[in-house]
Length: 210
Image 1 (cartoon, rainbow, N blue to C red):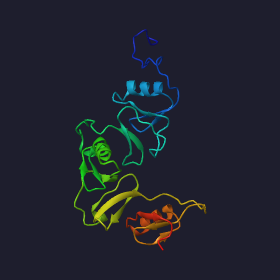
Image 2: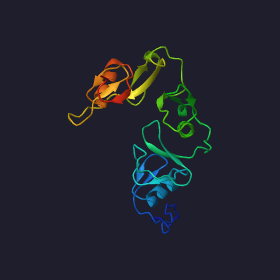
Image 3: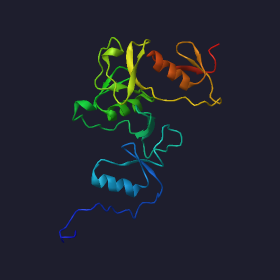
Image 4: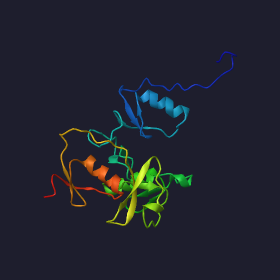
């Protein structure tokens, strides 16, 4: 009851049967301090919210233990997700949900992209938000979230990438040989060069190209 003695709805899930007391990673990619906090969030605003795995949300599948038959994949946002390959994804309710994968295929939603990643067994990655278009150059592609378009000459497609990463001055990083057959002091330095030139570079192998 509130101050006027009128009934009000409160979110008070039964957390008495929860055995894991530590943080959990939710299906929304957010870390909750415990499962009870996640259940409260589900009650308030996210009816489909569930626990993906125990522990904080991670950027790699290392040390992620997925429940049941689900498999860990690193999705288009470089976050580790537990996905079930035969999961039924809801159809998109908005055109804003469409995503263009790095494979040039349009996916109806992030769920569809993760499912395809699971079936493929390796990361597909996100090129940009929205349906894939027949772009002739990066000028045809609109990137969101402060990303910059980098052109992949190998496949003739653009990819939106974050270009605001500052490279540490640490000497401990290993040099890499990039797809342009040039050696860079680190993977970060390679990405910096790619952002500067507007051309996508990927690691061929660690160490010098020679």
